[in-house]
Image (tube, rainbow, N blue to C red; front, side, top):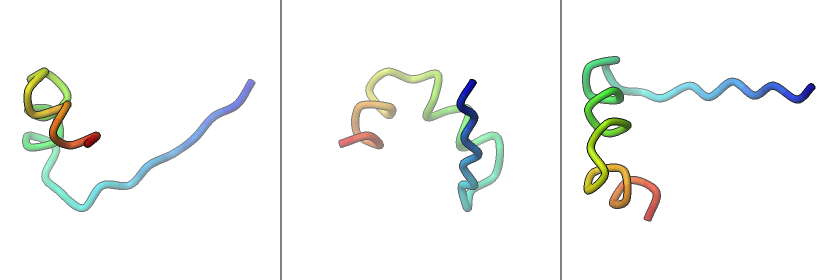
Length: 30
């Protein structure tokens, strides 16, 4: 099993918004 932790300097609400909106997610991942 491989596990990775990622810390993002943003409020959880903003991170969730980007993970649940396909357009924002595509922009975030480039």
